[in-house]
Image 1 (cartoon, one colour):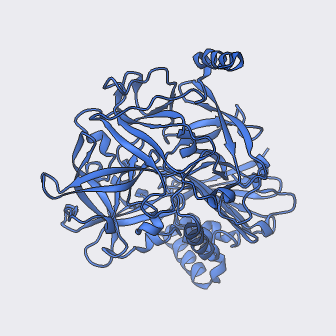
Image 2 (cartoon, chains in turn blue, red):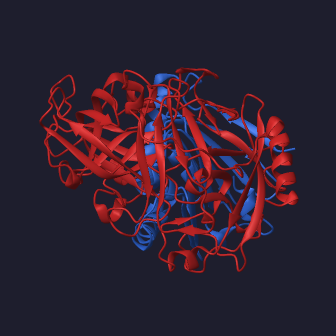
Image 3 (cartoon, helix red, strand yellow):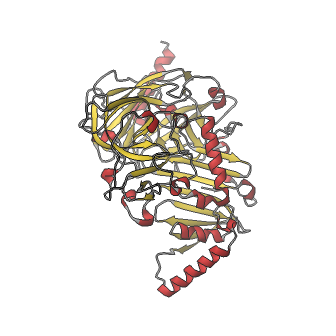
Length: 169
Length: 399
């Protein structure tokens, strides 16, 4: 059975002083952390917290056999899951909800692969359909319709041993 | 007609009573009428569209009978809500919508593989004999106001030209009235950031009242305002051109009754579910929707279907031989029906030069997007959220 830890970051009461200390600490962390650690996808597990703050969300963590799933519930209603390997790398992210999340934040250093991949696909065949970018080191798949989107992005070379793409939902 | 064919038809009709006919019988397409607008599936205004259903729409400056323009090549989309027109296709000047503080309003609208950006303007919209007055529409332009960073962060290409949109506009006639709904009326981090105010070159996210949002014009018609029917004939393989009808209203006229169509109620996301193979099983079916604006049938992925993706990496399936498959659609009202569909070699189709293909398909992990091939040979009813019909209150699909 997966083990779940609920952490509704903005739901439990924190004394004002404590909150200020935490935000100062986070500001320092953000300032001194190398850029790659900000990234959702491909970043280290600290980036889950950075993303949680960016999306002003609560967090639920579930420990699976081969990885950990951090489920972020932003107030915008689109649920984001970040998949962290035993070595501490975010190897996949998924999203389900009414709207598409900030991909610059969620994909981090891989954002440009989405931009160029989506542009390239649209210039090959103009047409309206799900987006399906499959590259050796980056996969981005997004579908749905207005007011209901879902998708996933993952790094095939970073999947933990024995984990297949079907586990990323 | 052979005895075998007669037997098959009898068997099909017998099963219709239980699960629907799967679209194999010939559908009747409405002729001309005050609530009927012709649909054409062809190469479209950019000359290279595939499986794209086009109509003409007449737009006027609100209240004017002279400042009007008929725009052809507008894509019929049951997967979105509201009229969007390329700025370059619009020769009349529609009034800009302004926020309560007087600043012009623009919108950033996400789609699965692109986004639309541009000002919100107001128009009277006439289609066949139906008129919707003073409806907010989006005009697609990357130059009227610069694309804000929040919109760029979606990572999708902004389509504001004929070559990138592949149409002169989109007519969203799906199940919701507004393109955003309550989310966009909220303040702070709960607002998804579709609507912007542009006091200068720096556009900022704004709250947008429901009545100001870009909206499905059908809901604003005086009559026949509870939904639409997309009626297209069957396509056997490929066709250069397909002619059909967009019919307004459900059960409001002699030409738009539900007849024997099965009603599939949708969930709060305007989705039904589909069962297929060992991936989308009855205890955990996949989300599914009927989208005339998608140019193929998009479902699952190569690992779960065993169908190879095209080596060109263009987001379609390319099996070596055509695959004939079956899935089951389920409405949230307990109705269920089997769907037969085919998947062919997409890259072979793209080099063929026709405009309509019944077996164009591609991957869409974990879900089913029943695009235009599903609509060939069916009359597909889309009932609008909250609207009353002879089969109950929308939203639902029926076919």
